[in-house]
Image 1 (cartoon, rainbow, N blue to C red):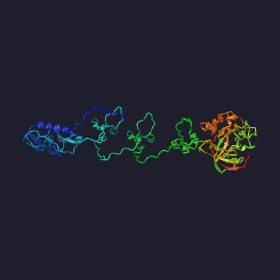
Image 2 (spheres, one colour):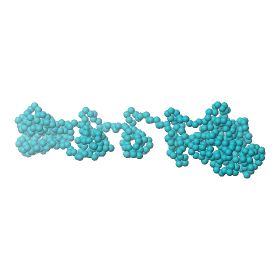
Image 3 (cartoon, rainbow, N blue to C red):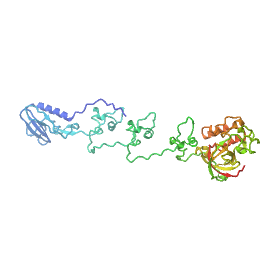
Image 4 (cartoon, helix red, strand yellow):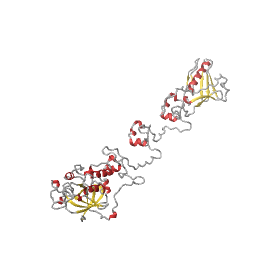
Length: 511
Protein backbone atom coordinates (compact mmCIF):
# COMPACT_ATOMS: atom_id res chain seq x y z
CA UNK A 1 0.00 0.00 0.00
CA UNK A 2 1.22 3.49 -0.79
CA UNK A 3 2.45 5.70 1.93
CA UNK A 4 -0.46 7.47 3.66
CA UNK A 5 1.42 10.24 5.53
CA UNK A 6 -0.68 13.37 4.85
CA UNK A 7 0.74 16.59 3.42
CA UNK A 8 0.81 19.66 5.69
CA UNK A 9 -2.55 20.34 7.26
CA UNK A 10 -4.58 22.82 5.30
CA UNK A 11 -7.09 25.16 7.06
CA UNK A 12 -10.70 24.03 7.02
CA UNK A 13 -13.06 25.95 4.83
CA UNK A 14 -15.04 28.51 6.81
CA UNK A 15 -18.72 27.87 6.42
CA UNK A 16 -20.96 30.40 4.78
CA UNK A 17 -22.89 30.62 8.02
CA UNK A 18 -19.84 31.89 9.88
CA UNK A 19 -19.12 34.58 7.27
CA UNK A 20 -22.72 35.73 7.22
CA UNK A 21 -23.07 35.98 10.98
CA UNK A 22 -19.91 38.07 11.22
CA UNK A 23 -21.14 40.42 8.51
CA UNK A 24 -24.58 40.67 10.11
CA UNK A 25 -23.07 41.51 13.49
CA UNK A 26 -20.97 44.27 11.91
CA UNK A 27 -24.07 45.71 10.31
CA UNK A 28 -25.96 45.76 13.55
CA UNK A 29 -23.16 47.50 15.37
CA UNK A 30 -22.86 50.13 12.66
CA UNK A 31 -26.61 50.74 12.73
CA UNK A 32 -26.52 51.78 16.40
CA UNK A 33 -29.97 52.64 17.86
CA UNK A 34 -31.32 54.44 14.84
CA UNK A 35 -33.82 51.93 13.63
CA UNK A 36 -35.07 48.42 13.54
CA UNK A 37 -35.43 46.92 10.10
CA UNK A 38 -37.21 43.77 9.09
CA UNK A 39 -36.21 42.62 5.66
CA UNK A 40 -37.90 39.95 3.64
CA UNK A 41 -35.63 38.51 0.98
CA UNK A 42 -37.63 36.10 -1.01
CA UNK A 43 -39.24 34.00 1.71
CA UNK A 44 -36.63 34.87 4.35
CA UNK A 45 -37.39 37.67 6.79
CA UNK A 46 -34.74 39.40 8.86
CA UNK A 47 -35.59 41.97 11.53
CA UNK A 48 -32.79 44.18 12.77
CA UNK A 49 -33.50 46.81 15.36
CA UNK A 50 -32.10 49.52 17.59
CA UNK A 51 -33.72 52.03 19.91
CA UNK A 52 -37.47 52.09 20.13
CA UNK A 53 -38.47 52.35 16.52
CA UNK A 54 -38.72 49.61 13.98
CA UNK A 55 -39.46 49.12 10.32
CA UNK A 56 -40.36 46.03 8.36
CA UNK A 57 -39.58 45.96 4.67
CA UNK A 58 -39.98 43.45 1.89
CA UNK A 59 -37.35 43.28 -0.78
CA UNK A 60 -37.62 41.89 -4.24
CA UNK A 61 -35.80 42.57 -7.46
CA UNK A 62 -38.73 44.58 -8.84
CA UNK A 63 -39.68 46.61 -5.76
CA UNK A 64 -36.67 48.83 -5.13
CA UNK A 65 -33.38 49.90 -6.52
CA UNK A 66 -30.23 48.19 -5.41
CA UNK A 67 -29.39 49.02 -1.81
CA UNK A 68 -32.79 50.60 -1.04
CA UNK A 69 -35.44 49.14 1.17
CA UNK A 70 -38.85 49.43 -0.49
CA UNK A 71 -41.25 51.76 1.26
CA UNK A 72 -38.72 54.55 1.74
CA UNK A 73 -37.07 53.19 4.79
CA UNK A 74 -33.43 52.88 5.59
CA UNK A 75 -31.28 51.22 2.93
CA UNK A 76 -29.52 47.89 3.58
CA UNK A 77 -25.84 47.59 3.18
CA UNK A 78 -25.29 46.59 -0.43
CA UNK A 79 -24.22 42.97 -0.92
CA UNK A 80 -25.69 41.71 2.38
CA UNK A 81 -28.25 38.97 2.43
CA UNK A 82 -29.32 36.29 4.84
CA UNK A 83 -27.97 32.81 4.28
CA UNK A 84 -29.18 31.28 7.52
CA UNK A 85 -32.81 30.61 6.72
CA UNK A 86 -35.44 32.81 8.42
CA UNK A 87 -33.60 34.64 11.19
CA UNK A 88 -35.72 36.66 13.59
CA UNK A 89 -34.78 39.34 16.04
CA UNK A 90 -36.52 39.71 19.40
CA UNK A 91 -38.50 42.75 20.46
CA UNK A 92 -36.67 46.05 20.23
CA UNK A 93 -35.40 47.18 23.58
CA UNK A 94 -33.17 49.97 22.57
CA UNK A 95 -30.03 48.21 21.48
CA UNK A 96 -28.64 45.57 19.14
CA UNK A 97 -30.79 42.50 19.26
CA UNK A 98 -29.70 38.83 19.33
CA UNK A 99 -30.22 36.88 16.16
CA UNK A 100 -31.81 33.41 16.37
CA UNK A 101 -31.50 31.39 13.17
CA UNK A 102 -34.33 29.07 12.26
CA UNK A 103 -33.97 25.91 10.15
CA UNK A 104 -33.08 26.45 6.53
CA UNK A 105 -32.92 24.36 3.46
CA UNK A 106 -29.39 25.54 2.79
CA UNK A 107 -26.77 23.30 4.40
CA UNK A 108 -23.99 25.40 5.89
CA UNK A 109 -21.29 22.94 4.86
CA UNK A 110 -22.33 22.94 1.23
CA UNK A 111 -23.20 26.59 0.56
CA UNK A 112 -21.39 29.69 -0.45
CA UNK A 113 -22.33 33.29 -1.23
CA UNK A 114 -22.27 34.92 -4.62
CA UNK A 115 -23.41 38.31 -5.88
CA UNK A 116 -26.83 38.00 -7.46
CA UNK A 117 -26.22 40.91 -9.80
CA UNK A 118 -28.82 43.08 -8.06
CA UNK A 119 -26.80 44.32 -5.15
CA UNK A 120 -27.57 41.27 -2.94
CA UNK A 121 -26.09 37.77 -2.25
CA UNK A 122 -27.72 34.46 -3.22
CA UNK A 123 -27.20 30.98 -1.76
CA UNK A 124 -25.24 28.66 -4.11
CA UNK A 125 -24.57 24.95 -3.34
CA UNK A 126 -21.02 23.84 -3.79
CA UNK A 127 -20.63 21.20 -6.54
CA UNK A 128 -20.49 17.55 -5.36
CA UNK A 129 -17.32 16.41 -7.03
CA UNK A 130 -14.17 14.40 -6.38
CA UNK A 131 -11.52 17.07 -6.09
CA UNK A 132 -8.24 15.23 -6.27
CA UNK A 133 -5.69 15.84 -3.49
CA UNK A 134 -2.17 16.98 -4.33
CA UNK A 135 -0.12 14.23 -5.92
CA UNK A 136 1.89 12.16 -3.47
CA UNK A 137 5.39 11.50 -4.87
CA UNK A 138 5.36 8.10 -3.21
CA UNK A 139 1.96 7.24 -4.67
CA UNK A 140 1.79 8.83 -8.11
CA UNK A 141 -1.42 8.24 -9.96
CA UNK A 142 -3.50 7.60 -6.84
CA UNK A 143 -7.14 8.52 -7.42
CA UNK A 144 -9.86 9.62 -5.00
CA UNK A 145 -11.14 6.04 -5.08
CA UNK A 146 -7.69 4.78 -4.04
CA UNK A 147 -7.41 7.31 -1.22
CA UNK A 148 -10.93 6.52 0.02
CA UNK A 149 -10.66 2.72 -0.16
CA UNK A 150 -7.05 2.15 0.78
CA UNK A 151 -6.27 4.81 3.38
CA UNK A 152 -8.06 6.39 6.37
CA UNK A 153 -7.59 9.88 4.85
CA UNK A 154 -11.34 10.53 4.46
CA UNK A 155 -11.55 10.81 8.26
CA UNK A 156 -8.60 13.19 8.53
CA UNK A 157 -9.00 16.96 8.68
CA UNK A 158 -6.43 17.79 5.99
CA UNK A 159 -8.49 15.73 3.52
CA UNK A 160 -11.83 17.44 4.17
CA UNK A 161 -11.78 19.48 0.96
CA UNK A 162 -10.93 16.54 -1.27
CA UNK A 163 -12.77 13.58 -2.74
CA UNK A 164 -16.27 14.40 -1.46
CA UNK A 165 -17.97 11.78 -3.61
CA UNK A 166 -15.55 8.92 -2.89
CA UNK A 167 -15.53 9.77 0.81
CA UNK A 168 -19.34 9.67 0.86
CA UNK A 169 -19.85 13.28 1.94
CA UNK A 170 -22.34 14.01 -0.84
CA UNK A 171 -24.16 12.50 -3.79
CA UNK A 172 -23.67 14.10 -7.22
CA UNK A 173 -26.72 15.67 -8.86
CA UNK A 174 -28.64 13.11 -10.85
CA UNK A 175 -26.99 10.16 -9.12
CA UNK A 176 -29.34 7.61 -7.55
CA UNK A 177 -29.45 7.79 -3.78
CA UNK A 178 -29.20 4.42 -2.12
CA UNK A 179 -28.69 3.43 1.44
CA UNK A 180 -27.21 0.11 0.31
CA UNK A 181 -23.41 0.14 0.04
CA UNK A 182 -22.01 -0.83 -3.32
CA UNK A 183 -20.95 -4.48 -3.25
CA UNK A 184 -17.27 -5.15 -3.13
CA UNK A 185 -15.99 -6.49 -6.45
CA UNK A 186 -15.62 -10.27 -6.46
CA UNK A 187 -12.07 -10.74 -7.57
CA UNK A 188 -8.81 -12.40 -6.76
CA UNK A 189 -6.71 -9.59 -5.33
CA UNK A 190 -3.20 -10.96 -5.08
CA UNK A 191 -1.48 -10.71 -1.68
CA UNK A 192 1.86 -8.95 -1.32
CA UNK A 193 4.68 -10.89 -2.93
CA UNK A 194 6.41 -13.33 -0.62
CA UNK A 195 10.19 -13.30 -1.21
CA UNK A 196 10.30 -17.00 -0.40
CA UNK A 197 7.44 -17.75 -2.83
CA UNK A 198 7.69 -15.08 -5.51
CA UNK A 199 5.53 -16.75 -8.16
CA UNK A 200 2.68 -17.82 -5.88
CA UNK A 201 -0.79 -17.06 -7.22
CA UNK A 202 -4.12 -16.86 -5.40
CA UNK A 203 -4.73 -20.44 -6.51
CA UNK A 204 -1.45 -21.52 -4.92
CA UNK A 205 -2.20 -19.69 -1.68
CA UNK A 206 -5.72 -21.15 -1.50
CA UNK A 207 -4.80 -24.74 -2.37
CA UNK A 208 -1.41 -25.11 -0.72
CA UNK A 209 -1.65 -23.07 2.48
CA UNK A 210 -4.23 -22.40 5.24
CA UNK A 211 -4.02 -18.65 4.58
CA UNK A 212 -7.66 -18.35 3.45
CA UNK A 213 -8.70 -18.94 7.07
CA UNK A 214 -6.27 -16.40 8.51
CA UNK A 215 -7.22 -12.80 9.35
CA UNK A 216 -4.37 -11.14 7.45
CA UNK A 217 -5.55 -12.81 4.24
CA UNK A 218 -9.19 -11.70 4.46
CA UNK A 219 -8.82 -8.99 1.81
CA UNK A 220 -7.07 -11.20 -0.72
CA UNK A 221 -8.04 -13.93 -3.16
CA UNK A 222 -11.82 -13.85 -2.58
CA UNK A 223 -12.62 -16.12 -5.54
CA UNK A 224 -9.94 -18.72 -4.88
CA UNK A 225 -10.82 -18.76 -1.17
CA UNK A 226 -14.50 -19.30 -2.03
CA UNK A 227 -15.79 -16.12 -0.37
CA UNK A 228 -17.76 -15.01 -3.44
CA UNK A 229 -18.77 -16.01 -6.94
CA UNK A 230 -17.99 -13.48 -9.69
CA UNK A 231 -20.68 -12.27 -12.04
CA UNK A 232 -21.07 -14.88 -14.73
CA UNK A 233 -20.08 -17.69 -12.41
CA UNK A 234 -16.80 -19.33 -11.60
CA UNK A 235 -14.42 -20.08 -14.45
CA UNK A 236 -14.01 -23.66 -15.50
CA UNK A 237 -11.21 -25.18 -13.43
CA UNK A 238 -8.10 -25.91 -15.40
CA UNK A 239 -7.47 -29.65 -15.67
CA UNK A 240 -4.66 -30.89 -13.53
CA UNK A 241 -1.60 -31.59 -15.66
CA UNK A 242 -1.00 -35.26 -16.33
CA UNK A 243 2.58 -35.66 -15.22
CA UNK A 244 4.96 -37.67 -13.13
CA UNK A 245 5.57 -35.53 -10.08
CA UNK A 246 8.44 -37.21 -8.28
CA UNK A 247 7.92 -38.02 -4.57
CA UNK A 248 10.31 -36.67 -1.95
CA UNK A 249 13.72 -38.38 -2.04
CA UNK A 250 14.01 -41.47 0.11
CA UNK A 251 17.16 -41.92 2.17
CA UNK A 252 16.80 -45.67 1.72
CA UNK A 253 16.21 -45.38 -2.02
CA UNK A 254 18.00 -42.33 -3.39
CA UNK A 255 17.42 -41.60 -7.04
CA UNK A 256 14.28 -43.73 -7.32
CA UNK A 257 12.10 -42.66 -10.24
CA UNK A 258 8.34 -42.70 -10.65
CA UNK A 259 8.65 -45.76 -12.86
CA UNK A 260 10.51 -47.57 -10.08
CA UNK A 261 8.11 -46.49 -7.34
CA UNK A 262 5.19 -47.67 -9.49
CA UNK A 263 6.72 -50.96 -10.59
CA UNK A 264 8.65 -52.03 -7.52
CA UNK A 265 6.47 -50.89 -4.62
CA UNK A 266 2.80 -50.73 -3.70
CA UNK A 267 2.96 -46.97 -3.13
CA UNK A 268 0.60 -46.15 -6.00
CA UNK A 269 -2.23 -47.59 -3.91
CA UNK A 270 -1.30 -45.68 -0.75
CA UNK A 271 -2.86 -42.37 0.29
CA UNK A 272 0.42 -40.49 0.81
CA UNK A 273 1.41 -41.22 -2.80
CA UNK A 274 -1.81 -39.93 -4.39
CA UNK A 275 -0.23 -36.67 -5.61
CA UNK A 276 2.83 -38.28 -7.12
CA UNK A 277 3.64 -40.21 -10.29
CA UNK A 278 0.22 -39.99 -11.97
CA UNK A 279 1.45 -41.36 -15.30
CA UNK A 280 3.48 -44.24 -13.91
CA UNK A 281 0.66 -45.16 -11.52
CA UNK A 282 -1.79 -45.20 -14.43
CA UNK A 283 -4.05 -42.42 -13.11
CA UNK A 284 -3.99 -40.47 -16.38
CA UNK A 285 -2.64 -40.50 -19.91
CA UNK A 286 -0.66 -37.42 -20.98
CA UNK A 287 -1.50 -35.51 -24.13
CA UNK A 288 0.18 -37.33 -26.97
CA UNK A 289 -0.07 -40.69 -25.24
CA UNK A 290 2.20 -42.67 -23.00
CA UNK A 291 5.93 -42.71 -23.69
CA UNK A 292 7.28 -45.93 -25.14
CA UNK A 293 8.34 -48.45 -22.53
CA UNK A 294 9.97 -51.85 -22.59
CA UNK A 295 7.37 -54.57 -22.75
CA UNK A 296 7.12 -58.34 -22.90
CA UNK A 297 7.92 -60.12 -26.16
CA UNK A 298 5.23 -61.01 -28.67
CA UNK A 299 4.97 -64.76 -28.24
CA UNK A 300 2.14 -65.25 -30.71
CA UNK A 301 4.52 -66.37 -33.47
CA UNK A 302 5.74 -69.33 -31.40
CA UNK A 303 2.27 -70.90 -31.35
CA UNK A 304 2.55 -71.90 -27.72
CA UNK A 305 -0.62 -73.40 -26.23
CA UNK A 306 -2.48 -71.10 -23.86
CA UNK A 307 -2.41 -72.29 -20.26
CA UNK A 308 -5.69 -71.81 -18.42
CA UNK A 309 -5.17 -74.15 -15.50
CA UNK A 310 -4.56 -73.57 -11.82
CA UNK A 311 -3.15 -70.32 -10.51
CA UNK A 312 0.09 -70.18 -8.56
CA UNK A 313 3.33 -68.29 -8.12
CA UNK A 314 7.00 -69.06 -8.62
CA UNK A 315 9.75 -68.57 -6.06
CA UNK A 316 13.46 -69.49 -6.43
CA UNK A 317 16.16 -71.39 -4.58
CA UNK A 318 19.42 -73.29 -5.08
CA UNK A 319 20.81 -75.03 -2.03
CA UNK A 320 23.30 -77.32 -3.86
CA UNK A 321 21.89 -80.34 -1.98
CA UNK A 322 20.99 -83.64 -3.58
CA UNK A 323 17.32 -83.26 -4.66
CA UNK A 324 14.70 -85.38 -2.93
CA UNK A 325 13.73 -87.13 -6.16
CA UNK A 326 17.39 -88.12 -6.86
CA UNK A 327 17.49 -90.70 -4.09
CA UNK A 328 17.92 -94.34 -4.96
CA UNK A 329 19.74 -93.91 -8.25
CA UNK A 330 18.24 -90.62 -9.40
CA UNK A 331 19.96 -87.65 -11.06
CA UNK A 332 22.72 -86.41 -8.70
CA UNK A 333 26.29 -85.24 -9.04
CA UNK A 334 29.55 -85.05 -7.21
CA UNK A 335 30.98 -81.80 -5.84
CA UNK A 336 31.94 -80.53 -9.31
CA UNK A 337 28.21 -80.45 -10.18
CA UNK A 338 28.85 -82.25 -13.44
CA UNK A 339 30.04 -85.79 -12.74
CA UNK A 340 27.33 -88.27 -11.79
CA UNK A 341 27.66 -89.97 -8.39
CA UNK A 342 26.19 -93.03 -6.82
CA UNK A 343 26.43 -91.57 -3.33
CA UNK A 344 22.94 -91.48 -1.83
CA UNK A 345 24.02 -89.37 1.11
CA UNK A 346 23.09 -85.71 0.47
CA UNK A 347 25.70 -83.02 0.84
CA UNK A 348 23.27 -81.21 3.15
CA UNK A 349 23.71 -84.16 5.55
CA UNK A 350 27.51 -84.21 5.16
CA UNK A 351 27.48 -86.66 2.23
CA UNK A 352 28.99 -86.33 -1.23
CA UNK A 353 25.84 -86.01 -3.35
CA UNK A 354 25.08 -82.57 -4.80
CA UNK A 355 22.59 -81.10 -7.24
CA UNK A 356 23.72 -81.29 -10.84
CA UNK A 357 24.34 -78.02 -12.64
CA UNK A 358 22.31 -79.14 -15.66
CA UNK A 359 19.19 -78.77 -13.51
CA UNK A 360 19.63 -74.99 -13.78
CA UNK A 361 17.04 -73.34 -16.05
CA UNK A 362 17.81 -72.70 -19.70
CA UNK A 363 16.08 -70.83 -22.53
CA UNK A 364 14.69 -72.71 -25.51
CA UNK A 365 13.46 -69.53 -27.21
CA UNK A 366 12.52 -65.97 -26.33
CA UNK A 367 9.22 -67.26 -24.98
CA UNK A 368 9.96 -70.78 -23.69
CA UNK A 369 12.39 -72.19 -21.11
CA UNK A 370 12.96 -75.48 -19.28
CA UNK A 371 13.67 -75.88 -15.59
CA UNK A 372 13.23 -77.88 -12.38
CA UNK A 373 11.09 -77.22 -9.35
CA UNK A 374 10.45 -78.24 -5.78
CA UNK A 375 6.81 -78.60 -4.74
CA UNK A 376 4.77 -79.90 -1.88
CA UNK A 377 3.71 -83.55 -2.24
CA UNK A 378 6.06 -83.97 -5.20
CA UNK A 379 5.11 -86.19 -8.09
CA UNK A 380 8.76 -86.81 -8.95
CA UNK A 381 9.56 -86.63 -12.65
CA UNK A 382 6.21 -85.10 -13.52
CA UNK A 383 6.12 -81.96 -15.69
CA UNK A 384 4.00 -78.82 -15.77
CA UNK A 385 3.58 -76.10 -18.33
CA UNK A 386 3.31 -72.69 -16.71
CA UNK A 387 2.44 -69.34 -18.31
CA UNK A 388 3.30 -66.08 -16.56
CA UNK A 389 0.48 -63.56 -16.10
CA UNK A 390 2.53 -60.35 -15.91
CA UNK A 391 1.94 -59.69 -12.21
CA UNK A 392 4.07 -60.25 -9.15
CA UNK A 393 2.66 -62.26 -6.27
CA UNK A 394 3.76 -59.80 -3.58
CA UNK A 395 3.96 -56.71 -5.81
CA UNK A 396 1.54 -56.67 -8.71
CA UNK A 397 3.62 -53.96 -10.39
CA UNK A 398 6.90 -55.83 -10.23
CA UNK A 399 8.69 -54.76 -13.44
CA UNK A 400 10.30 -58.14 -14.05
CA UNK A 401 6.98 -59.93 -13.75
CA UNK A 402 5.48 -57.51 -16.29
CA UNK A 403 8.30 -58.18 -18.74
CA UNK A 404 7.77 -61.95 -18.80
CA UNK A 405 4.03 -61.75 -19.34
CA UNK A 406 3.00 -64.46 -21.78
CA UNK A 407 6.29 -66.37 -21.51
CA UNK A 408 6.11 -70.07 -20.65
CA UNK A 409 8.19 -72.71 -18.94
CA UNK A 410 8.03 -76.46 -18.80
CA UNK A 411 9.27 -77.54 -15.39
CA UNK A 412 10.06 -80.99 -13.98
CA UNK A 413 9.43 -81.90 -10.35
CA UNK A 414 12.77 -82.83 -8.73
CA UNK A 415 12.41 -81.90 -5.06
CA UNK A 416 10.07 -81.21 -2.19
CA UNK A 417 10.12 -78.56 0.48
CA UNK A 418 8.68 -78.14 3.92
CA UNK A 419 8.44 -74.39 3.34
CA UNK A 420 6.66 -74.63 -0.03
CA UNK A 421 2.94 -73.78 -0.26
CA UNK A 422 0.39 -75.80 -2.18
CA UNK A 423 0.14 -73.34 -5.07
CA UNK A 424 3.87 -72.56 -5.13
CA UNK A 425 6.55 -73.84 -7.48
CA UNK A 426 10.08 -73.27 -6.14
CA UNK A 427 12.28 -72.89 -9.21
CA UNK A 428 15.86 -74.15 -9.00
CA UNK A 429 17.84 -70.99 -9.86
CA UNK A 430 21.56 -70.73 -8.94
CA UNK A 431 22.00 -67.62 -6.78
CA UNK A 432 18.31 -67.64 -5.89
CA UNK A 433 18.85 -68.21 -2.13
CA UNK A 434 19.77 -71.36 -0.25
CA UNK A 435 16.54 -71.57 1.76
CA UNK A 436 16.40 -74.10 4.60
CA UNK A 437 19.68 -75.83 3.74
CA UNK A 438 23.08 -74.72 2.46
CA UNK A 439 25.61 -76.96 0.75
CA UNK A 440 26.71 -74.18 -1.64
CA UNK A 441 29.25 -72.63 0.76
CA UNK A 442 30.96 -76.04 0.91
CA UNK A 443 30.66 -76.74 -2.81
CA UNK A 444 31.75 -73.28 -4.02
CA UNK A 445 33.88 -72.14 -1.13
CA UNK A 446 31.70 -69.02 -1.02
CA UNK A 447 29.72 -67.62 1.89
CA UNK A 448 28.47 -64.44 0.19
CA UNK A 449 25.37 -65.88 -1.41
CA UNK A 450 22.85 -63.12 -0.85
CA UNK A 451 19.78 -63.42 1.31
CA UNK A 452 18.82 -66.86 2.62
CA UNK A 453 15.45 -66.44 0.92
CA UNK A 454 15.71 -64.53 -2.33
CA UNK A 455 19.46 -64.72 -2.87
CA UNK A 456 21.37 -62.13 -4.86
CA UNK A 457 18.32 -60.14 -6.00
CA UNK A 458 17.12 -59.45 -2.46
CA UNK A 459 20.37 -57.68 -1.64
CA UNK A 460 20.34 -55.54 -4.81
CA UNK A 461 18.71 -52.09 -4.85
CA UNK A 462 17.99 -49.28 -7.30
CA UNK A 463 16.06 -49.28 -10.54
CA UNK A 464 15.09 -52.44 -12.36
CA UNK A 465 18.03 -52.02 -14.71
CA UNK A 466 20.37 -51.42 -11.76
CA UNK A 467 19.09 -54.52 -10.03
CA UNK A 468 19.67 -56.61 -13.13
CA UNK A 469 23.22 -55.39 -13.41
CA UNK A 470 23.79 -55.99 -9.69
CA UNK A 471 22.59 -59.62 -9.93
CA UNK A 472 24.72 -60.15 -13.04
CA UNK A 473 27.81 -59.11 -11.10
CA UNK A 474 26.85 -61.40 -8.20
CA UNK A 475 26.50 -64.33 -10.61
CA UNK A 476 30.27 -64.21 -11.06
CA UNK A 477 30.59 -65.80 -7.59
CA UNK A 478 29.19 -69.02 -9.04
CA UNK A 479 31.57 -71.43 -10.85
CA UNK A 480 31.69 -70.98 -14.59
CA UNK A 481 29.46 -73.32 -16.54
CA UNK A 482 25.83 -74.31 -16.51
CA UNK A 483 25.26 -73.05 -12.95
CA UNK A 484 26.53 -69.55 -13.71
CA UNK A 485 24.61 -69.59 -16.99
CA UNK A 486 21.48 -70.41 -15.01
CA UNK A 487 22.13 -67.31 -12.90
CA UNK A 488 22.49 -65.22 -16.08
CA UNK A 489 19.23 -66.77 -17.36
CA UNK A 490 17.51 -65.32 -14.30
CA UNK A 491 18.79 -61.87 -15.29
CA UNK A 492 18.16 -61.94 -19.03
CA UNK A 493 15.27 -64.28 -19.86
CA UNK A 494 13.47 -64.13 -16.51
CA UNK A 495 14.09 -60.35 -16.12
CA UNK A 496 14.84 -60.87 -12.39
CA UNK A 497 11.08 -61.29 -11.93
CA UNK A 498 10.36 -61.43 -8.20
CA UNK A 499 7.87 -64.20 -7.42
CA UNK A 500 5.71 -63.87 -10.57
CA UNK A 501 2.20 -65.28 -10.81
CA UNK A 502 1.37 -67.99 -13.35
CA UNK A 503 -1.28 -70.39 -14.56
CA UNK A 504 -0.28 -74.06 -14.90
CA UNK A 505 -1.33 -77.44 -16.16
CA UNK A 506 0.34 -80.83 -16.31
CA UNK A 507 2.05 -81.75 -19.55
CA UNK A 508 4.38 -84.32 -21.06
CA UNK A 509 8.05 -83.88 -20.25
CA UNK A 510 10.19 -82.96 -23.28
CA UNK A 511 13.48 -83.55 -21.36
